[in-house]
Length: 90
Picture 1: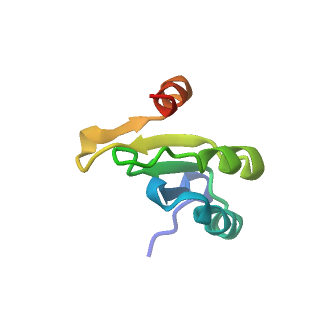
Picture 2: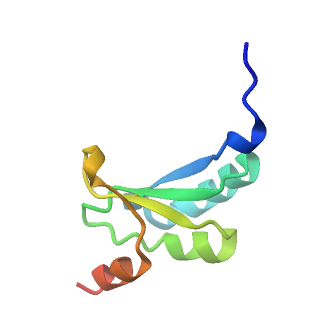
């Protein structure tokens, strides 16, 4: 079979925003094992505020790349920190 060049592999960790702080230890393990380069935060359309991103960004040095706010492809958006912070206080 074909071998994919290593530089073309971009592992992304998908985190369910509804799971809260319990997610951090899983994120730490997966990131360490797979060399994740960023995070997709899903299920932000529910009651979850997504506060888990703070320890992930600060302690694991993983950027939040995308967020999911629904079930369709159009509901996947590039992460905007300003919009995220403003939404936390609504």
